[in-house]
Image (cartoon, rainbow, N blue to C red; front, top):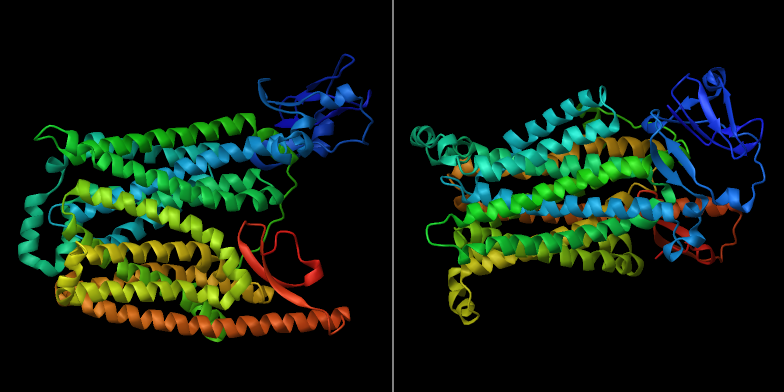
Length: 620
């Protein structure tokens, strides 16, 4: 163990202590050296802390000279090597850049760089995985619902079990490297080994025989077997988002940042993520257009894939390298100074208990309807849209270039929407903000399915604009996805979190647990299951399109009805809380209150009623 901040009890001056648990420790003061056995004292006073650090309770504070206050506090490993150096000036906001302490910059800048690289990689992987499975031989957009249900979901469950077991035998740093390096190795190997050998590795003849026997209704599941290396890439790309972004990065960031730092910088991470989206989108376009300069006969998509995966490998190594630097230069000193975090009890419900709780509470039912409806709606439109992209851009490079432009547009629009969302909450309130996402999805979805189903009569008008009905459907589908996702990130997610605020503690815990257990998986897989039934029943995704459009309309209308119902209940609960607070506080009836949105401890926007004269500085 490393002990930080140990003071020499004889001289009452600061000193540096190094040594191992229950081992003799050498304390060096500014007047000389004193050797003593501190095993008994350590045993009685030192308690283990996070990340293998221990802090000794400091004795009565002593007055230090100016020179002493400027000298650094150094943390050393058991072997005696220096691993962190933090001076009092590092923690003084007045001496930091823009009034922010130096130690905060040493944490936030590397974390921001890590987040940028992770999201840069994720956008490249997300666009590339769709290109691979949709444009593969014998495949199409029909493969995506089957992939999500029968391959991606079991892989996510398997990783969760494996991660839980590894976390019991590894420390935090070992677990981080064990998780991220297999991703880096796979993406590099895929571009330079697996993809060039695809004709050898893929069982094309066997898949053809299966298709002749089963018929075209089962082309989707058979395509998974036919292009199994592409499907493994798809799953690994999906897991990068959930494992590296949600689990590794945010888990590490939450360990080394304080609540005040999180309030100040976590929202900026969200804006930075959209900047990464813009840059990665342009990168995808650049590599996808390289084939124009290649010699005839050269596989342009293979060259583009190698360039993109090379950047992913570099980005992954930069993430690991930044994490390694933080662990040795910042983490030991920072974690030793963080206050202990109280453990919070989280309600765990079984599937049956979750359904029972959802059925009892109209408020939670409406909130659950919002979550499920979004997941189903976006999946219904997205898969149909990707099938039209393949028709318009059958070449993988052209498909990839279009997806790169789509990612750039999504990043730019989301960035603007996140800035605009503060005005929406302030001016129009929760109800209007909650209705924007389904309204956007409904309007753009109706236009998209109308072009897909009834595009022929519009052909002369579209021709005057230089468009075909197919290209018009592709562009409208892209706009639908861009605005739906940007409104989801900037408005839908904050609205969902705000809806928990007026509930009592038990309902908050059980309601969130029920939605996590039932509604999130149901929303994500519900759309895929509906599409699978339609494809098997009608033979293809194209034949299922009219029915998918009707289902989308019904789900979005139900979503909007639930949002209106929840808005009324939300407003009534807020008003009831204010009446109780005013009654308990004996406030005068004439005092004015205002509903405001503020940034909470997790960096999300939440709302509450406050007196106008007591409005917090970060309220909008």
